[in-house]
Length: 145
Image (cartoon, rainbow, N blue to C red; front, side):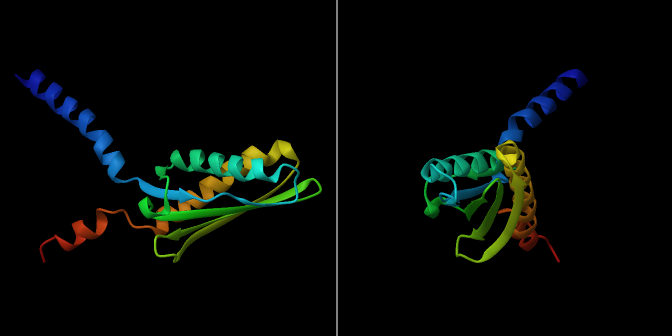
């Protein structure tokens, strides 16, 4: 009987994990990057947006299609002067209030992707600190005093 109970509890935990993970996700709308300097700026706008969204997805920040669906709005900029570049990203809540800002600098195309990963990591850390989980206020208000 003990083996069956352990298996049942393990199965229950495994099946409920995706629901817990989904509940803690923050929905984000990503606007195209503002790009200054490089050739093929339009390609860079969409490409940097997609790369940042995918990196933040690893941090449980889910990309949505419209600002109306989003908990946060993320915008970014990329500026290139010669071989040196700078990327900035800003996250605001759905009412437009500032939540987080991160930036990185690099030199050469070889540093672009690693710099974008650092930008995403920094922004995700700041957003997680500034944005309360959706279930936190409910849990705090329902506790007995």
